[in-house]
Length: 281
Image 1: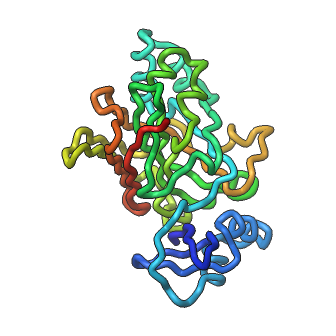
Image 2: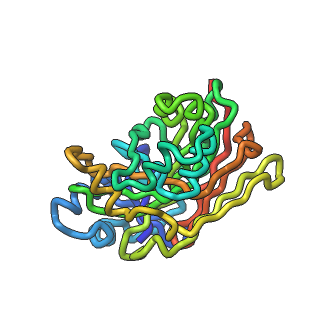
């Protein structure tokens, strides 16, 4: 089932998306829906089917969920670890170590405040000359770290700031409009094995493609369950938390984001997440 959120009668509520139309779920946000599904021990798609309106409407999808927390994972693809060590001028350094060892890199990406939906602008920091798109599979969690669904994410990052010093990672990763999510959340019954899919990313500038890349999600080095297990060790993340699983598509400096660029991420079965870039102040 494809789930997300819409705005109707002045309220943001959950909805089921089918055939380009939305069936609103009255009096429930997506977080409310996840909490109720867990409390009633019922799959979220079953509860949504029961509660959704029988009258489909033409309503645009908003953020698929308003996440209380967003967490990111790094160095989960070999290409990412190799690229980052090369940036720091080391043959094999801390990024390769994280890729190789059992404990993953996990960092706090922010809250709903820094998130934007499909077609909304992503941000470029004014103190960065190399802000890059990071296309990623994202996981939406229910209670106790249970996987409630999957969506797409753009973990927009100021790579030159992290390159200057790894301790600057929070400034590289967390700022206004640094995380795009969407277009919808797909429940696990429709995506039993997301690692069997392929992700693509394009960047368009003034109508011209300046970057195109792809990666099989099977290249994800760690299992999604392992990433969640490490995240939730002594860390009771709330229902609706979103986990970004890392990028395997490396955007070169020649395709650093500029105002007006359009980044489009695609995965069959989930859809397309497209966002224009703007300069922040």
